[in-house]
Image (cartoon, rainbow, N blue to C red; front, top):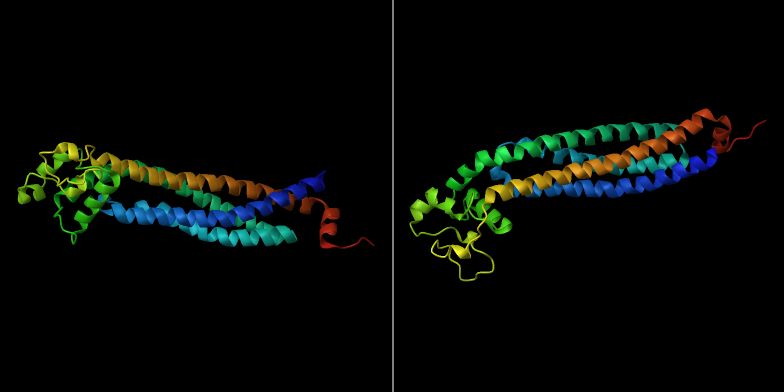
Amino acid sequence: MGQCGITSSKTVLVFLNLIFWAAAGILCYVGAYVFITYDDYDHFFEDVYTLIPAVIIIAVGALLFIIGLIGCCATVRESYCGLTTFVIILLLVFMTEVAVVVLGYIYRAKVENDVNDSIVKVYNEYSGTNSNAQSRAIDYIQRQLQCCGIHNYSDWQHTRWYDESKNNSVPVSCCKSSVASCTGSLTHPEDLYQEGCEALVVKKLKEIMMYVIWTALTFAVIQMLGMLCACVVLCRRSRDPAYELLITGGTQA
């Protein structure tokens, strides 16, 4: 019965190590996705530390490649030292992922305040030229999120760009993609996106942070199962001399 438990634990552990390799790639992808998205929305953030969970999750992903290798070798050979190292590293990674979850929730709660504090300033710095970083950022989110203005398209009437242009229009990035003849003129508001960008930017950034949180939670649970299986093998080896002798291939005199 005990031998069956060991075999089952070893099988699960080898399978989990293969999952760790896949997880490493997924974690690195999620972290990279957050970095890329942040680059598109960075003008709406005051706090660069929002990227900390993404940095940690990429580091954890890289570490999981090493963990998977150690775990497979230690499991196949049933090395006491290897399995002990494996459990310790998994415990450290587990604690790190718990920290990612906590930081993710903290920064997710701060997203709305950060966006509220910066979005008016970004819109006031809009110049309509491609050389202006704020202009590129606003045009991008208005097309990407299909929105216009901070709360709605009328917000553009209170910006410096609107006063200087004097053409009673909003940027063409406010135009609905289905309206080919749209010029951004306020005389045809039905051609413009009706929803404001502030709420959609907040929603998008919170969704991204939730990707990080749920990814970290999912693999934290898998790592707990890996530690449990490794501990079963370690306990069996330390408590049963006959099993130890069988594994090492020795014989009793």
